[in-house]
Image 1 (tube, one colour):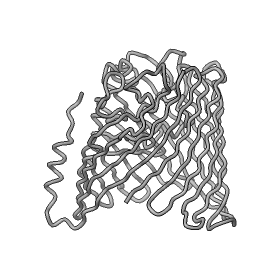
Image 2 (cartoon, rainbow, N blue to C red):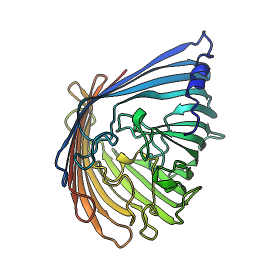
Image 3 (cartoon, rainbow, N blue to C red):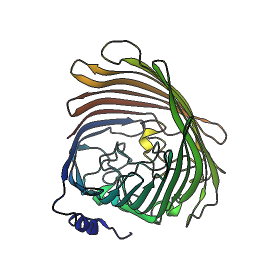
Image 4 (tube, one colour):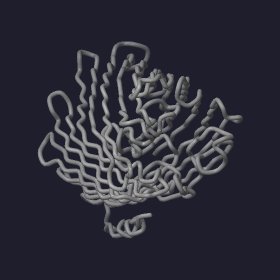
Length: 408
């Protein structure tokens, strides 16, 4: 395990002058009931968890220091948390009990340059390659140094060196699911605000340098390009994104492979008249491919540092890309209101996925995801449901979430 700079950074935080002009408390809390039923397992899983994060940020001029802790408590623990219990008895809900330092960072910020050092949350572009795993109570962070540079208007370079991934498994993490994964990771993007959207070239060098974690087989280098933009068409907003990347083995990965990634996505947000203020339907569709090489395990396109829950269905059947890759054809429909009575940001959403293998083109299964969400004061309430109907991959799985999030 690599050396952590968390404690030195806390000492650095103490060097911020006592005359600091801004002290900002950081507090958020989450209460959630997650229920999972999976064919082939004798018992269902029910987790009632409470997650609290608390910390403080001290700022003066371009400098700021931040420290934040998090704790997750299982109030009802009738579930397999990925570390304790048996995967042969109950479905997994990857929220083990934990208490830990979530973030500890020192930052220098000006208009052309932002430097951040320490344990930090990193969310790049759509989080397909590097994200925060926000759905999990023990969020994902990195011990890293990050530089964001805007040399001229419309151009941004973003480069990170991360020597440790702090995982969702918390303080009891071990073996193939450790508390942290060391390695020399480099994330680099260069973006240009073009007339048709932000065009970004990227390089992600992922070094999972711990033998118990798939025998180094998740280490990869991915190079690609992404275009994302939007445009007003009267009262309607058209958005789009497209991406391509090529991935191959990296560092100590014993596999020799090459795999491609493709994404095409389009959305329409109709801000037409309706009940409440700013009501309107939303439609979207897309096609995402994580390609395969020769059909051997872990020679398909992998994204182990991503916010994986955001992609390929909420039932989490594809957290590791299958050996034959995956093709995800999806469509979504929803309705949103800015205000309904005392509720704000009210939304309803339904998403349909059809999953196939990239190699040999076999039907894996279909999934339907549903979400209802609204905000009242500082609290966001949500009800989420996922139903995966298996054909040739995994087993039928149904998940239900009832969740309250509160933040100051």
